[in-house]
Structure formats: structure tokens, C-alpha cells
Image 1 (cartoon, rainbow, N blue to C red):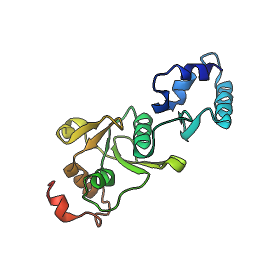
Image 2 (cartoon, rainbow, N blue to C red):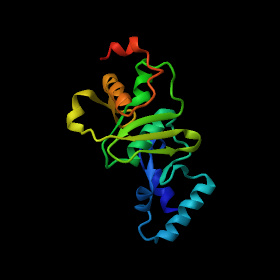
Image 3 (tube, rainbow, N blue to C red):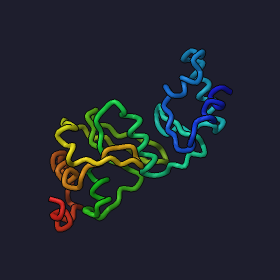
Image 4 (tube, one colour):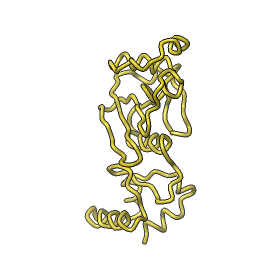
Length: 178
């Protein structure tokens, strides 16, 4: 099948996230209905694994947990300004005691939404009007997740700005970053 041949030639295909537009480029001669049928057959046979609406991986995908969710989030909102923040960053920094399991939180110039990725976890986008140029000094690029990451101080401000529950924040640890 043309899609399988095309996908088999992609380097590191077991680390790739595919959107439907990526896959449709492998079958340019198919009309939308025929293309949907092909994708459905590949999914039923186990040749493609659906992560969420419009996003797929190969069955031997090596990505797991936050790495998979981060890359899916980057792919879903590629046209918008997004950065990891809130509980995700604070947990990584040890400022909150609980670790979000199978869930990542991002600030996004797009609308707020929660995307279920089934057994893989959940991606939460929280809308922000903040501009990248205003935050550049407080962002670093996380190459593993293909996303920008807020500093701990910015994540703390984002928590307060979005009126999220700060009850889990260890104020003593947080003061180190303010």
C-alpha cells in the first residue's frame, strides 16, 4: 500500500507524529472519502495508531508519556504560540508536590481546550494573550518535547493569572524562583 511504503522510508518513523495532512500527501490521487477509508483500514489492521482526532503514530512508536503528549501538542497547535507552563513546569521544578500523571498543561495563543489522547493522557491548552516577544527571556526550548517551556517564575505567574488552585504550591520552594 502506498501509505505504508511511504511511511516505511521515513527516518526514525517510530518517533514521528503524523497529521492527516501528512498522510494525505502520500495518496494525492485519492478523494477525501477514499482517503478516509484507507486510514480507517490501516487503523483497524493496527498499521496506524490514532492518538487523538487527526493525529497518528506508527504501532512501534517509541514515544511515551509527556514526550508523546508534548509532540502531539506541538503538532496540534503548530500555527500558534504555545509553551509548557502551569502545573507541568511547577511539578518538574519541585514547586508542587503532586506530579500530573499523563497530563501536560500549556499556555496557548489559541483557544482553551482539553484534548483527550485516550490511554496516552490529556493535553490541556489554556488561552493567553501574552506575546512571545514579551516572554522571550523567560522561555527555553525543550527539544525533547518540541515545545517552549516557561521558567518557574513565569509558570507561577501563569497559575495566578489564570486563577488556578495554588494550594499545592510549596511557597518556600516557590520563593526561590520569584
